[in-house]
Image 1 (cartoon, rainbow, N blue to C red):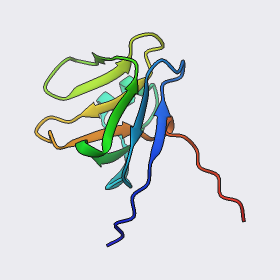
Image 2: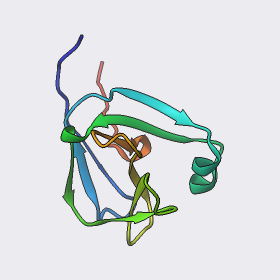
Image 3: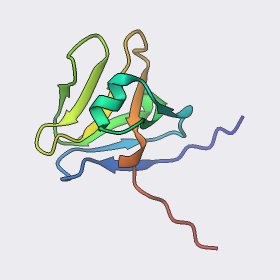
Length: 108
């Protein structure tokens, strides 16, 4: 198992909420459930699952959106970007919208 740590920053579209992950994702996924389709106005939602302790908010105040149920979806209160989700029954994990993470370019 690769235990190399990596830090990646992310932010909402307007930049008011900035966050960071300090681990590699446990899994990446494309969810095709009806809820994700409605929240993204697309056929799917891309996300990456991280341990909660590897996730931090660096600036801004995310707000809860979506259905306000046991699964909590967090958004930027200004631009309404869907930032991350804390899934019901999975308190030790956070599901981050992959498209908001900084792009890392590698030069060859």
